[in-house]
Length: 382
Image 1 (cartoon, one colour):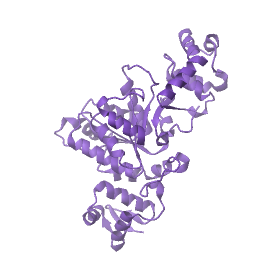
Image 2 (image 1 turned 90 degrees about the vertical axis):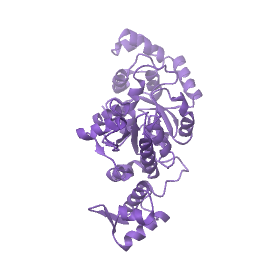
Image 3 (image 1 turned 45 degrees about the horizontal axis):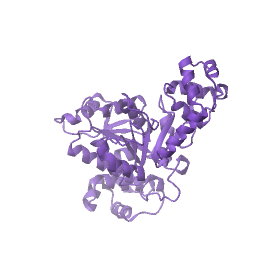
């Protein structure tokens, strides 16, 4: 039975998730039982044992489903400024429901609407080189300007660069945290945490007040990949946590891309190994992603997929804005192509635009039906 076909109340689902010792498999089994489980505030240990729970689990869950404990949890979330998004809620991302172990509850601070937008994961090493940070930031900025949300883990290095770049565009960014969403880690990213809280989204599956335990950070990697159309490894040594995200993505049937770097640099060796194994593809710029996932981006950017908050303007160059009038930059590109078919390199030479910005504009013109791409990366007017 699909997750969203359960019939328990969201308050019960949240209380189950916040009960120590009750894992997602137990939650899912009870959830899929629906009305037969008869879960409700004040349910007794005996009733829970009759549903197949062991005595210790039944005792814990009976306490977790007490009205007093449920109200205490609600007040704690309210004090932390969090919104809990559950399997039962329309805001819960369909992409995440497709993985084998979707978290029953996501604790969110910021723009919950980003959960239903097109997302690309960009991850990498904490000990990034200047090259790696630059490439991650430029890629994230180009994706965000095209209306794509960038997900990463708020760690130092590549994650920080990806979030920073994504905040420069309308797509914004999602930071998936290992610790509860109201805890800032690492402390030196306090400024970035606040920027994302104001303009993006902070997400964790850990309820507020959850103490640290081994596995919290590796576990969050499956959420980054689960939210994403694809995952980009910007720079990662062998054994890097970013490669764990790549492993999750492969298991979840999400494409993995690697930004190539010097073969002599150990900080990028892990990504190069993925390329050699054939489990990832090389990524040169944002256009590779925007073109491959054009249909998915267009579908996820539509009003039925959640859309932007009321009153928020869609970027004129985003896939969701097509068709529509051309922007000044789009018109400049279009006039050059009207004159004669041109390659991306020729257009860059004429305009002085960066590769990422140019690919975003070319994709927008294609979606607006103004140009088409010919073999050899040549663009011609329709």
